[in-house]
Image (cartoon, rainbow, N blue to C red):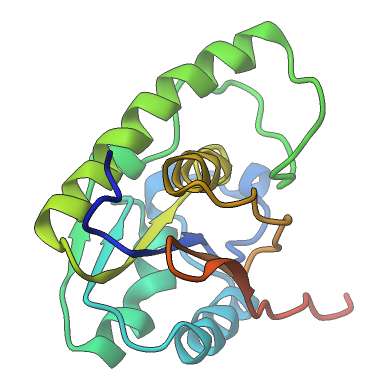
Length: 185
């Protein structure tokens, strides 16, 4: 079991990065929006000190956890396993528990689950007694949360918004960490 020695995992979706469909460059270099930078700073205060930070290599993910890593005095370890699934053709709005996805999305979820399991195993092996933050994309974050909750035998977490996180622990179950609500347009 991946969590035999890793008691706490903080699961972080990347913060707000503006309209994905309006971005004309490579998605991997899309930065956080101004709201996203505020969410990342506020979330770092909510998360507190961690022993390690792992992230998708995409800029919006690493920018989300830069304040967390800085507060803890650790480097961000980039894991390709936390990168969004590249074969998603049409991006859907953030909805971590969207009902009844088409079969093709179930296949993508199965592929994502394998990647998520590998990322968690890497973190647990490197930090067997630690509190570890993992930052990923909207297609993988719910999988990380479901996988972690199942492995730890705790209830599934309630949905969170961007700018929030789940802390999943064998000792204390699941708790949601604060999210910054989007500003009115």
